[in-house]
Image (cartoon, rainbow, N blue to C red):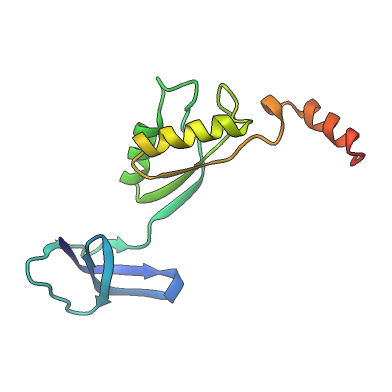
Length: 145
């Protein structure tokens, strides 16, 4: 399947590109960027007045999972992200329970892969249960303070 995005403002920081152009996507990958592109049988989308850019990354999200899935879960949060042009999000550790151990992160990664719409990365807490005193105890034990 092919998609031809016509007349969008293509913004590609990697190539220092910011111009009105067409983008041809074949099998989910960009096949060509240029002027007056055509492709037999491609679905054509007129992007006049719109920006065509690489997916955005939100490095500070609160997806509320685990613990508050009634407010938002990986599926609903990543749906919202995708609707806003985000292809990857990074979720914070201050959930309930706190994301403070590798086993929990592995389980959450699996859940996010199964139910998420975009890629989800995780920031783990630097201290157990987000308690500064635990970090200070470790620092004192390591003679860092």
